[in-house]
Image (tube, rainbow, N blue to C red; front, side, top):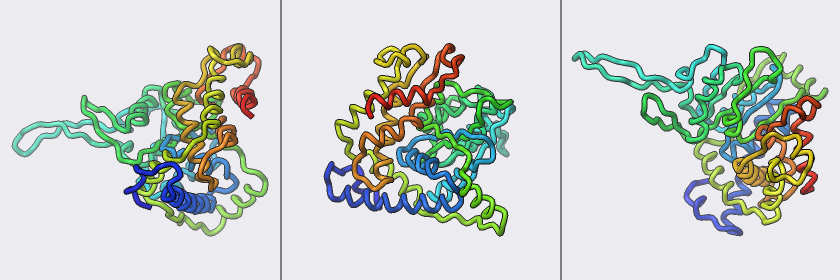
Length: 337
């Protein structure tokens, strides 16, 4: 797959159809390679692949020990990306992520500043336990995630391409955690909740990880191929019914414009236009992953939860009643089902 024609595709172009078929076959191989080391998390793997194909950042939430870190490591290998890992702790500073300028003196006695790049200068940044760091450090990633560049000492420094942040987070009720600011949550393309594996999958984990270890994960695609795939995804045609479903779903989640009484009474703030954009890109990627040339309303329903759950907040009364955001999203989905 090459990048020469991805910017000139037209809807119905046979070259686009062939390229999407080829991309779908590669994604199937990538899914199989990841499944060889991550057991019983098919939904999580698919939603992670959708995020990468759409060019977004991913927030993985789950208790420790469910394979979140291993999933990110496998992604780096499968897609041939330069990956780095940062363990977020309460004493981590923004400079520990972005880098800093140091004063150097030459042999002639001349002094100058030199920028030393931080771990954010990579293609796949794993922010492990991101909510254990202070809000100041968490916000250091905002500019990098949105603009793919950082500003240090009044100078901009561009990040490599592709650039993805895959952050893991422990549930907020655990001790020593800080909730992510709303502005940063909105920069994450999806929030994927990682659950406990079922019995059969946990049996596979038990057998596979306690015997002779095989650390070799197969590489399926390279960074250039991933960039090409991300450009190609934008050419996947979307029908008017899918566009209307996305708009109806997202706008119904805003208490100011929602026709649903529960939303008006229980939601503090709803998803903005970035939520609509994320859903549009996500349904395109899901269609390709599942071997289809165009998304359907079913794709919108399937991705409503991971795309919207971190872009909505309940008011105090709803939280006191034990209402969950997932219940509200279910009501939204009923409007277009």
